[in-house]
Image 1 (tube, rainbow, N blue to C red):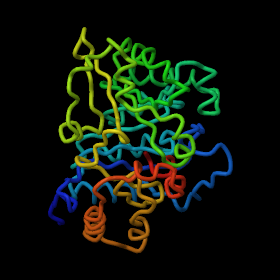
Image 2: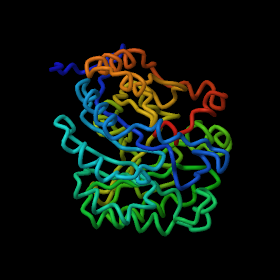
Image 3: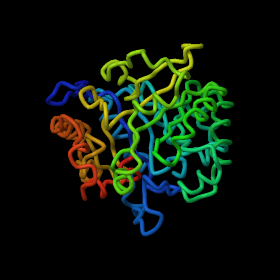
Image 4: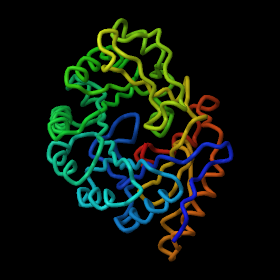
Length: 339
């Protein structure tokens, strides 16, 4: 039996949250995430099996992880995902199991996922205008996304969050509409600063909108004078900081400000790609190949040791501000890392 040993990095940041990509494929082509064509998908043999995902979750929870989020690509494209959720729900140290999805297939899968034990859902919605949405994701899918979000609410998922990547000149005139859409349905809207990763690095200079300007554009929908929570206070569930409605403190708007007011000093998460590479930071161009170690017969203790060693090498913070359009950033695709 391997004793539980909560891992910390060299700056004393504890490991609490794991984002694990179950597939690199996606049925959308968001302009800030991945190219529309000429994208090389991983062969099936390179993608983590369910058994390998379970083994990694066991190792990470021994190292301190308590919250597991399934990502992609688009995780709902992974065949047998409901079965995987049911299997992970049985892992004794997993306290919260969540998913981030583009919601195109959520209408069919929301209820089965809830029955399997999924706790939380975060869905992406970057525009409420059909033609604008189609231009961004290069697919006519807004109807499916909205239907999926509604199905998740009907299935009983509480605290459902709606993520919007804000882009100047594209959807920054919809911020209030997106808040109203979410609040009217009991959801929490969250606005994410565009990051110069992958395709985002190509469009970043002209479309970046800082979170402070987003707050200003929301006007009296939020109490802007309230000081947002410090990263250390908000990171137990995630990096967002929140501002309330002046009329109802239960209504909040979240802001994920990775560029202008980042949360690196309180970061408690790591990522594992669909091919089994551990990335201590979203900005990392490479990672530790845990899949290869498992396939060579590594024991649970050896996997835990590899996780702890990789975490110890975690940088103090990302370097996007210093070089927002570096070649390295352009080759770290969000869809491949499991943003």
